[in-house]
Length: 525
Image (spheres, rainbow, N blue to C red):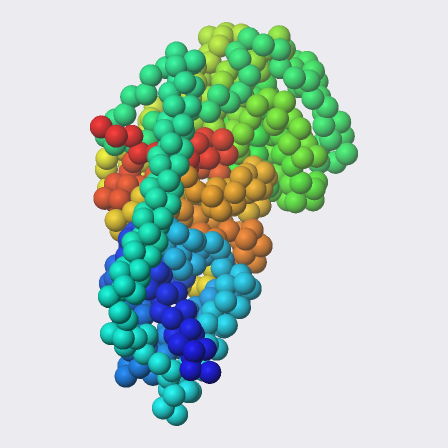
């Protein structure tokens, strides 16, 4: 029994010793794990040091018989604390990475994590109980004094061999990681070289190539035949029949920025009816689209079953728009986001010829207050529309975010101080977000080296967001105020905020651009 108690103490000491050293070697990851488990960001830095020091202290006092009881009590207290944190997060539907052994091993928590902590806690409880009765087993260090010189040399040699093997394993692991990073960089360089472009870092921003969205200008627009809100069939040929160009507006009934744009679309349909046919390509049931259409006096609403028309036109997000000439050819690149759509509509209404190609709309350059009046082109606010603050530029201080997460706890962007954060603007009811969700989960499970933290700023209900199963913090912003403050105009879109709290990238719009931004590494000057 004495030997069993000694083995149990050695096992606990080994577990806590390795865990403490690994956490100290990866304090950044430890801070991340602490905030992921729901603790305030202000506690992350001190706890990232105090927790591993406590683990190392427990490991040290477990070895001598005189202090083994206190060590067992400390181990039991820490394990019960860990189990409570794991159980609470699992009950809330969250599965953050445990980061139990730093970079040596980190995986999402689950039933196995809870069972492992329970087994270790049971062992610590047994040691504490036997120690209370005065039977903690033999000392783990006293036997060294009884060894002969030959035995001491053999023991030292064995420890040295084990240390060399551990060092060799650590070196090989570091070498494999370095080779992986070099391969990723080489692939990026080859991709840029094949496209004839060169990376141009600016202000520490991540050089993300814009997603090639939309069909080439001048190619034939894909035909479409969709049902309207009342069972009628609408085709592209019918929309072009009066000899006017067509503006296809891709929307979604669950997209917040799309809903905010509907009053403008209704006004455009009325004012530009003699110059332009504006049709909405939406999805969902006729009932959920009909109420909003009647409220804003919309006509020409077409319903696609899934995303077949969006995919045919290479549209990757909502709201988006594309201009089709009277001859049935593509007349513009895709305009992504409300501000870009307003610019494209104004260009179409003021174009000298309906067959003139339209330039890409640039939402970032749109003036505050709505992007210019579609009627006169002057930069004055649209009546009834709230003034839109200017978007922050790269290098400027990021707008503050302070919103409640799914458990009701307030989360602020400043809580992530000292780490890069990818702020993702999301809506669980957005079809493009739904299509992107599996890729986002895969990125969460296997983030690339140097990947930023993820903060999801979402609309929708608490239940809908919980059902997504994301591990990262999700905060609710039903009015899309945070997205507008960063210059985002649709979902999914994202922006990178640097460790210094400043904007570090342009707003990435659409799933491919967002994922590319998430996987990119900060450019080195």
